[in-house]
Image 1 (cartoon, one colour):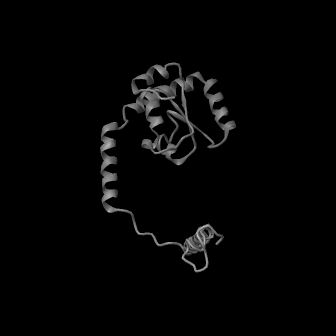
Image 2 (cartoon, rainbow, N blue to C red; image 1 turned 90 degrees about the vertical axis):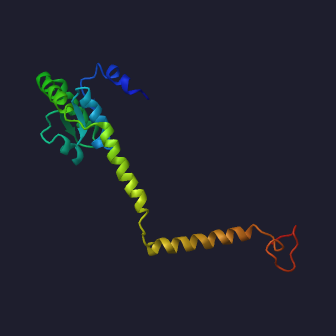
Image 3 (cartoon, helix red, strand yellow; image 1 turned 90 degrees about the horizontal axis):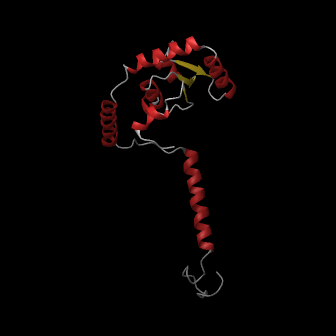
Length: 165
């Protein structure tokens, strides 16, 4: 559930690792940055972005993305290797010293967003199948709307406002 940044150390006090399956933006994973800031090693899916963050798996272990069995095997391995877990925990605390300043990252993103907004949306040509689909949809919508109208509403002779179309 929701929590404040100040609550995070208390909430994670009993955690030995941080396991996540996400790969959303957040500076290669804000969850990873938070885990490192707390000195916790990470269990991460084997997406390239995480391999870039910790190529030698000094402070992390990776599992096959989408595989509960692989995740369980990695967690079992870490639970049975106190020395390995301690080494990863120490490496996580060391990696935390190299984390970028969040405020500086926000400034960079604001500049990128401002540049994108100034550039405007690119002109993208419609794909032929999409144009054909839209023409078909428009014609069907028009026919359906006309079918709900009386002849009088359509301005046709011989119709009355109360009568059938």
